[in-house]
Length: 149
Length: 436
Image (tube, rainbow over all chains, first blue to last red; front, side):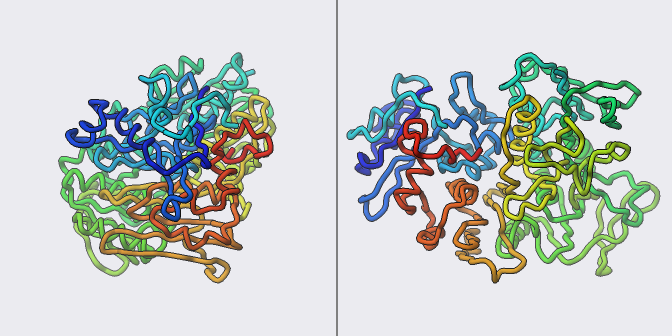
């Protein structure tokens, strides 16, 4: 399956991947509307880490592991791996216990405190290429085939 | 090949998936003494408190059992295993033959022989869906409940009843709640939150007698002499491996069913996983039962793999819990409260007023435990650092940072752990970071 790979040396710490992610998962899919007018603005499913004012930066996101720690830890069954290998979170089923947050060694599942639901990368099912990858101006995020192991 | 799995919770599910990944043909029979398909057992407090409905108790998609071609026997209790004739015996006399057997029966709540307990009606335990359902049915008539035991199960039961506007008193023998998973400050924060929500928490005391005429409860008398009026008692002292049905068998049992690092028991072709098993600890390698949900899944996965002829090795049980109490998030993992602190290096930060606490436990520069209260974001990075035994000598100081992440580690460690280029591409990078 295709996965998102993060190239640290190419990351400029601009956070556009996060903006792209939030926009894609908003109701309007428009960045201005999403940020200014939508009541429940999504939170980003990728996290840009920075150190020393951005000298070091990298965008981290779900690896869609072959044997996901988050799935094993999930107490409600909200996290399942679909037939394509995508690790999916069923928001209806999620109870916000944060067991997945505890288990994911990549720190790639966020807490949405407003909805009290976990938040994770879904590889943008409505798009050919995930929004974070398309938003990256320096190809620090690459979407391509590759096994996790 | 006939696979028989006794038990139908998370360890069984891990095993079913592992078996089917390797063997599409064999017959799999799952036997459960409960009447439900696999359900999110820790969700029973959410169900009791009315936070979720019964539909959301389902742990699996409806088609799971048919898709994996499972012969599912619910409401069936196994009362014995004959390892010579390779059969399990059911209540009612039926027997089922196995080629490979998995024992994943979980735990039974421990109910001590407290004076007056035997003849009372409203004594409950709180480990199954049916326990929660029974409590829910009578909840209208509850005025005041006493919960014996301030561990995870007791506090979640108390929270569920509190959400139904019931008055609740928790009585804990230790000097704080959550004494097994948490240290003193974290226990204090949780107790403070419970009290702020109207739950009475009494520590360093225990129930010595349940009072009342006939089947009715009028209150409990504590060791200190205090009397707490109540009409309902929930016993949440702990669980024990549910291995009683194996007494007549020749399978080695200590506190739980003793297993090796492939989850094999002392009997040929018999495996055990989950709360009933006694497997090696991640740090000490000593065997002990570890009633931890993710660990049960992992053990089930390893057992199922071995049963179907594959090979995976258990890295040892790592305790971890993520629990919310009245919207305060708490995560604990590994060694959180070492008995002999001199062998460990401990760093902590606390802001009890704002329900924030962070504690890091290191040994020989390796991270061995963490407690996070409040801000628990990205806690899993810590579990990864523990499991992968990363030398933290140069990065210790950063572990308490609220936004600690991969950038705080060296490039080399980051490339191995986060594998930005993908592990399949660079063959020199060991495939380790997914943990199994």
